[in-house]
Image 1 (cartoon, rainbow over the protein chains, first blue to last red):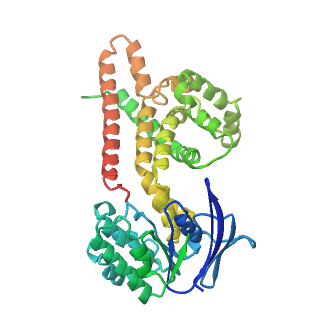
Image 2 (cartoon, each protein chain N blue to C red):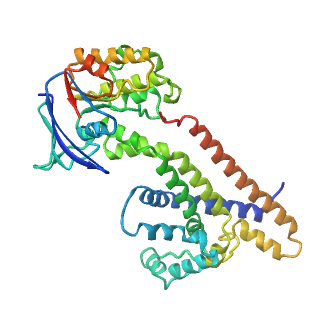
Amino acid sequence: MSFDVDVRCQVGEAAIALRFATGAGVTVLVGPSGVGKSSVLNMVAGLLTPDDGHVRVGERTLFHAATGVNLPPQRRHVGYVFQEPRLFPHKRVRANLLYGAPDAAPLTATAAMLDIGHLLERWPASLSGGEARRVAIGRALLSDPAFLLLDEPMSSLDPTRREEVLRDIERIRDESRLPILMVTHDAQEAERLATSIVRM
Amino acid sequence: MILSDAEWEVVRLSLLVGGTACMAALPVAFGLAWLLARARFPGRLVLDALVHLPLVVPPVVTGWLLLLAFAPGGPIGRWLLDWFGVTVLFRWTGAAIAAAVMALPLMVRAMRLSIEAVDRRLESAARTLGADPWRVFRTVTLPLSLPGIMAGLVLGFARSIGEFGATITFVSSVPGETETLPLAIYAALQTPGGENSVWRLAAVSVSLSLVALIASEWLGRRWGRRLHVL
């Protein structure tokens, strides 16, 4: 079992309740915008605390309301690629990539895989949308995560870049075997990447 | 422009008082700015008002309140005397305290705005990358609010070296000890034939303030160029 999630949470006016248990590979969350897909990712990451339920990834319990387990985000070993890149503007690309890395050794290989090796000395403000997105993916991968959360990783990319990022995700899925929980509103993307699909 | 020895002493003392006031007020101002920007607690509005009080109360009143608190019979003055055997009355340290209190609201304001402007989403990104709250503070929040901290320091410094009312009420004007630029200028104005001295000291005053303002603008721009959050 990769993701075993059962959460209920009141976020402002919206009541979010979702339950799913999926196996290895990519779990895709689909649903109309505003239904709370990103909030579910935040609950899995520990950035938002559910009112009730549990979150388990692999063998680890990250949150369990009944027993009071609630690991802080920094101890969940999550690789979270947000909808917007959220690169640290005061650090160069290299420092961004290594921010969460326990070890700098995989930097070259990861940068090569994402084709961002030539950007290492640049400032985030000088990157294009697609480049920034790939740096954000690289930063999440280099933090040596136990699982990945991807929030609309292809949004606001032109078709060429979109195809590149899609291929990157396929490669990560097939090579690293990390459990991936991904949000998208694009049916084609979901179809192409998903091992399981969860509808909200 | 040649300053007399006494005038150099005034300039030296002003820099000492202003610098000390700013450095002493910096951690306090940052702590208050942080509380006001981030913490939610009962009495937050009252704290906010108290911090800004020296901005709106007549400086003479602030100086008088400081005098009550720091006089040998006052609550802080007695404690300083009993424990450390020191008094700040008629001393440059007292002038620095007056300057710090008057500069504090400006410093807190600038720092608070810059802390509020830090994108919280970057902090949560850092958390997911394994950073504990202290590391998030050191590596994300603090560097990103640095322009505001610098601006606050410069504003505070400029306010400190210009402080008049609270200083003269609290620690009086003692040449070589508490007579800073504005106090010396005022004294020279009261002295027959003191016009030349007034001109020189006023020129120094304006130059110091100008340099401080240009420095803060330059630092802010240099830093701001990179900070386009993606």
